[in-house]
Amino acid sequence: MNNISQLIFLLGGTGAVAEKLKIKPSAISNWKKLNKIPNNKREAVLKLSTHLDLDIDNFLTSNKEHDAKIKILLIICGGIASYKSLEIIRLIRKTDIELDVVLTKSAQKFITPLLVTSLNEKKCYTDLFSVEDETKMNHIKLARKPDIILVAPTTANVMAKLACGLADDLASTILLASFSKIILAPSMNPVMWNNSATRENYKKLLDRGIEFIEPDKGEMACGEEGIGRFPDPKLIFDYILSYINKNQTLNNQLKGISILVTAGPTIENIDPIRFMSNQSSGKQGFEIASELTRRGAKVTLITGPVNIPYPNCENIIRVKTAKEMLDNVNKQLPADILICSAAVADWKLIPKTSSNKKIDMNKKIKKNNDNLLFETIKNPDILETIANSTLRPKIVIGFSAETNNLKKNAYYKLVSKNIDLIIANDVSNAKVFGEDFNEVLLIDKFNCEKWEKQSKKSVAFHLANKINNLLINYNQRDIDA
Ligand code: C5P
Image (cartoon, rainbow, N blue to C red; front, side, top):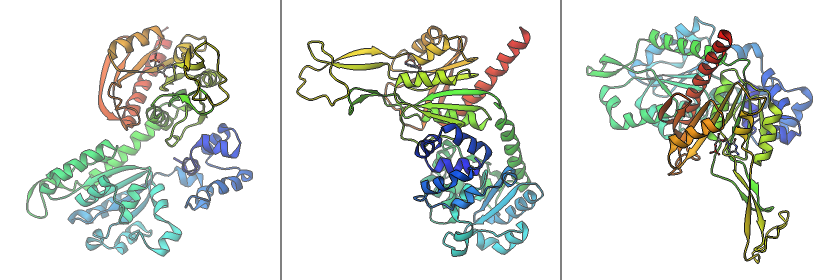
């Protein structure tokens, strides 16, 4: 995420900033793309950010070349292996990667800030409450700057702090305040590593998308044997390089592909106060929009009203009703791919009296309307409409939330709506709405895959892989034809 994207994200997202500044969301998308805010809008952006404790100049005076470099923050915790991380610093310093280093208090018992500063030829950070550091490079800036935070060695203590969300020193505060990829390289006594508390923390962190470079098996400095040894620093360095390479490939995977994603619920007003809607949080759709953006796609997210932060993507359009959603999807066509993850309200409710007279929906309906009735009017099915239109995107993907006969109902939708892929989930216990996890079936005309329970982020990651494969097959079909 570049500086301006981060700033827009912190200010509430593209849609919210566009609305507050009364400009088009596409203008904000351009700022994010160019990583630059035009001079005549800086004042307005400054005003929007007054309530945030940010060094706004740092965001506004971004330097593109500088931003193009991969940035790593190495956090060294206090363990017997701390000294081995000096070799990681040496190896990273031979590359083009920009490196900052934080030492925990315990790490300073093994290696000194002076040693790290000499090796990295740069200030080494140690203190959350340093007046000098806070003015020049505060902990939030340190947390936001890197693409990757490598914690090596990671102690059981820091794993536990991160799992619980504790922030009582510089390292743990940075870890909590960061959007970056976090990679942990734990090293500890084998009994500590196998302790059920550490095992639970490990699992929790994995579920949150934190990556581990597993410790080695062997003889420990304390004389005991087992799993817990710090891996060879060169292996850790190679792991980080391969992560960067893999990501750079992924980042361009969907370059040039335009994707429309619908997300969240839609709402239908009954009167100026009441409305009909559903429990969709928008989380799954937002994760999908975010992952596809990360892979280089030009994503337009069309979302109903939600209470979660907007993702970083090219364009965000906020709508309320099913009709507004359909109109906006239509406006954005043609596109290569349509993903309908929105839970669109299937009906509008028209209030009527028992004698079938319409009630004015522009005024609050009074309680003395004893026999209030509702006529239902079916909303347009966006997915079906677009999938059968002349501007049908190459790939159309839908969602299916069911309380019974999941597979059968989802398959029926796939065929009847003429779509390529459907992601189905069982919502009979309503444990999906608003949660961070999802358990889905992925159904196309020939296959049904079960994806075990995983984070919505992970579902988005795997769906992006699937989309990439579908595009490859699609293009191959084009060549063969
Ligand atoms: O038929 P059902 O509403 O269950 O289908 C769910 C799928 O259809 C979802 O992908 C949802 O986004 C889409 N849908 C739609 N327009 C509607 C209703 C559902 O696009 N009015």
